[in-house]
Length: 330
Image (cartoon, rainbow, N blue to C red; front, side, top):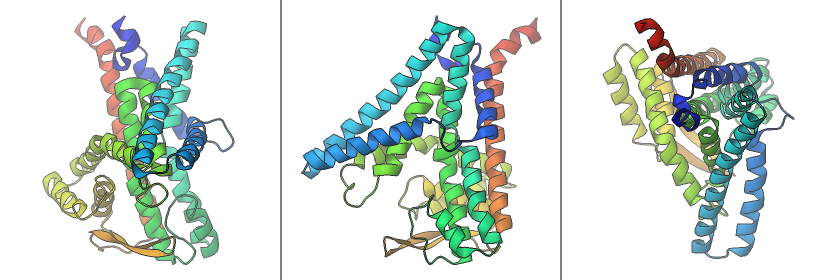
């Protein structure tokens, strides 16, 4: 009975995790296909409009935002669990297939890679307007006047910042609780990306969502940095440099991941970004030992893939171990 509820104890957990990683690598998130995040986004849009219309005070908007977060997270978990239950009722292998599809939809490693390559393609052809336009789909900063070097920095910062919350954190929660828990984390992440801003009209509405995302991503982000530290020649020194740089960043997580990528690649990230016409200075992370180039972007994607291979392989091995030990021990 316990194995029916606790994902790591399920006999097919390793199959679900491995197949989900493979499905994400093969298909990513095809445009036009049904996707949980699109449903979440539609629900958030309706919820935020209702809150902003009827909740006029800061306190009311904070409570409204908290309610929206609670409903979306619990609803995402419940829907995921319910779909799996229906699949199991039809046939156990249908339930497994449902888990694989739902879990793959939460894993964004391949999508992150494709987004970076999408911007890189016109940039390498000298099409700056095309690269700026494509970049605007993925970043919040103004892109209209970015130079080639600034576009490259934006792509690198996007890969580094989104590796924890878009790739390793969903995998982390999938390992702990399967597709329902990964969907719940994805709901928090989607909330943060849509309403978790420190500017009007989301200053109060998105406060709870932003803090929840920061808290839930905290450990997976540090484990991501630890993975890169262990791959370096001097793990202790690498960790210390990342920690020193991350202290200057107001975000509890993005500074860590961006610093880790910067030191791993021997580049410097950070600088002046413009948001809705307002310049904002971001702390400098890493050292400018190398100039930013398309090759560096490709290397950053190699790092992302390396992290996912290590995490995916390690987690699948841990889930498979209880079934292999009896065979090994006889």
